[in-house]
Length: 156
Image (cartoon, rainbow, N blue to C red; front, side):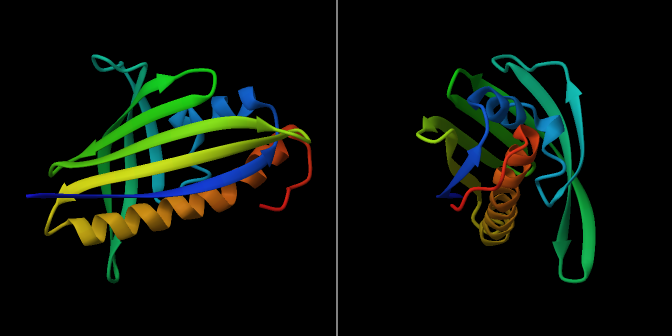
């Protein structure tokens, strides 16, 4: 039996919308932002995907650290929206729906919704790991985009 839940966050950055899209739509560039990622390798696109990747995370279980490799696909990457889906054994999926908006003052607002589905016994651990990792990524994202654009970090 699968369990499913979602969480969301918003980030603001002083950058061009195209720069934010480029960073968020290319998983090879997210290793510096995502605290669990240790390796991202681009692979031939799977059917229905614009781009596909093999991603290796380092997960923790108590004092143990272990690598897990999974597949991630960019399904949609338009002018202001990116949808990615990561799939990991056993039957675990993480769907990332990101919407970007320009705001007054040269800001870009990035709204992200993460939906995780996993087998019921694995769900609490997987959801905690996904939420902690993505919220850590959120704290780094605005600063990384501001640095790329050469501007100061705006207050969120």
